[in-house]
Structures are given as C-alpha cells and as structure tokens.
Image 1: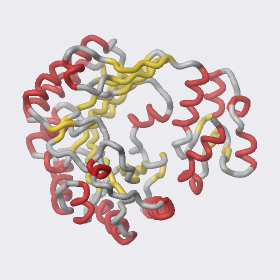
Image 2: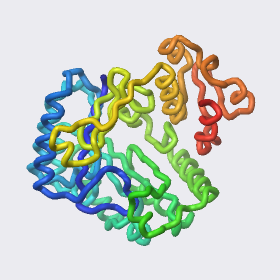
Image 3: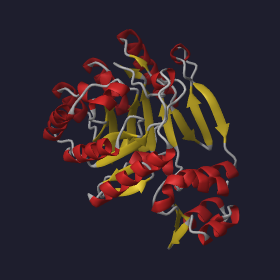
Length: 360
C-alpha cells in the first residue's frame, strides 16, 4: 500500500460542469462527516507506510479553519514516508493566509488549485468568479509561505471558446509559473447544470485541435507531457496519480471514494446519510488476473512512457504480446516500442481509446 485518497464532498458553490460527488457546504453536515471519516480511517487503515496522501473533492478548502485543522489532525494517523507527497485541493477564494499557514504547519507539500480559465465568458458559463490578479496574489502568498509545488487545472473545449481564448489562457497560466498543469477537455455529464441547460459539446475536430495546441505550447515551455492530460516541470510529476496509472493499490476514504486493496476495487456509498450511518461500501469487485492485466493496459498506456514489458511479464507471468494483439499495432505504428517500454506515440495519444479497443 503506497497511497491514500480522502474525499471531501462539500463546496461553497456548485460548478455547472461538475459531475463529481458533491453538495453545498453546511457546517452541520460537514462536522458529522469529518467525525464519520475519522471513524472510517480508524476502522480500516492498517498502519502501512504511505508515500502519497491526496485530499480532493468537492472542495476541501471550503471547510472552516476549525474543520480544516480537525481534518489535518486525522491525517496524522497515517504512517508517512519522510518525503511524502501530500496534496490538498483548493479554490482560489478559500486561500486565506490563516488557511495556508495551517496547511503548511501540517506538512501539506502540494497545492492543486482549480482555476479552469481566466476568460470572463467561460467563467460565467462555469459559475465561477475570479480573475488573473486574484490567482497571482493567492499563489504569491502560498509561495511566500514556502509552497514549492503548485498544480493548476486548465479546462478547455467549451462550445463558446475560441482558439484565441485558449492561447490567452495558456499564456496567463504560465505567467503563474506552476510546477504542474492538469488539462481537461469539457465533457458534459448527465447530472450537471450544463446538461440541464442543454449546452452543446464542442465538435471533435476542434477539441483535437485545442489539445494539439496545448501539447505544443507546454512542450515549447519545457513542460514534460507525461500522461494524456498532465504536464509537469522535470521532477514534478504527480506521484499520487502515478499510483493510479501504474495500477498500484491505494486506500479510498470518504463519500464516493474509490480504493484498490488486496485485488479488490471498491467504491464507497454516494448517499451522505448512508455514509453517516456506517454503510460504507456500495460496490466491491474481486479482480481476476485478466481484469488486473486489462487495468494495467488501460491505465499504463495513459502514460506517455507507456508500459514496461519486463515488469508486466514479471507481474503476470505472461508476455504482453502473448496476452494482447500488440504486433499488428506496432506494425501500423499505433503503438511503438523503445527499449523495454511499449507506448502510444504522442501524435496518436488523442485517439488512445480507439487503440485500446483494438487490444481489449
């Protein structure tokens, strides 16, 4: 076991595109939730040393100072490696001096800040309010307190977004000098305000063009494209997310959280009252060897580096090319091999789902 994910479902505002498990913040429910979260961890964490801890949501930073400290005290239960990566998700409006000091005191090492865009018409569509000066001031504040690993979220692919909008956002995001960028093409989920309001999705050709612009721009500015949607300065790749993509086991605590332990992938309940009443898991799937191999392939090929064929054979006692139709895909260059790694070439990573379908 190497990692822990904790889900905080509360938000001060619900963004129009969000289809994660979330609800409006209410101190009555948040206090009860944190108490239950504490019990869940006491009952199920077995004391393993962990190298990454990720608190996501929802919006963990929307909790009050008192609640944030209670949550951070809960994390002291975990046996942590000395150089642990400890990520806390934030919104700009929550980043006060007091809250940042608290996060620093409890050894949070990485901030993941959901900005999405600086274009006013896109922010209106998302139901968000901030501007570049807000972001610059809050990030400078975090830097002054010693935070040296900051990740920003960039969203693109809105029906009313132009290429000019995207290029302007990329320019402004890099002015903030982040160590990491996660980029998300807008997909309109069924349980979102955008769906209710019948907002259309962008056409696939424009989406692909925007993705190419992002990849080229960030590469030009020395960011390493290490996963389909993620870019980092050298040495600043998300260690926690690599646990997922490397198909390694991890704990998931909190409402709707997913975990992977002892060959079982599980998801916690989605209903808050059920969770508070100690009804923890809604789904458990015991994986067969074939299931695990499929996950290894689907997750591993998200990485630009791809899958280590030697480690695959060592892990599953079968060669990758004997388990999946690799050779024809290598022949038509939908896959490539470099030393011990098989990977999807960067110019085809956008169509990775089509390639995976040919393999599984």
